[in-house]
Length: 151
Image 1 (cartoon, rainbow, N blue to C red):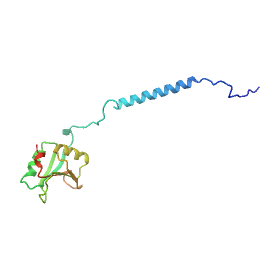
Image 2: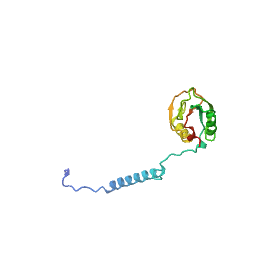
Image 3: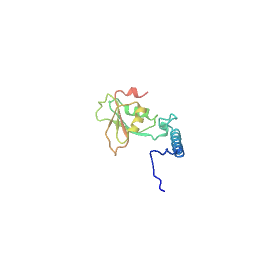
Image 4: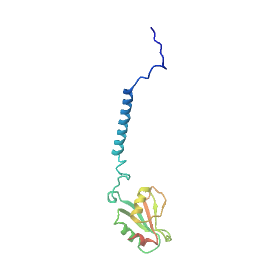
């Protein structure tokens, strides 16, 4: 009464139901991935992140220093900067008036604020002299090339 199991002569059984379920699951997964990509902006052309307008951001605090010895240059430059989103905390002179090129000195600020300040002033040269107790985020040392940044 025992029937022998012959695996070589028995025709394969058709399991179309399990194949259909797998196909529907794969199709559903593809649809979910496409919806996620569309809703997250992958195909909408939104490659850049949202950014605020400059007047919506907090003002950048700077100290303006006359680095080339021209009388009242720091005050004039500070007046020019006051038209932008820049808060001039103080003005003064460098110990030696030897600066041919204007430069931004990072005191407490970060690279993102540095990029904003570079856009607003046009001054691209920068250096870092971090000091957490400084009165402003940046120093701007105005050099002999000041005219190109006051337009």
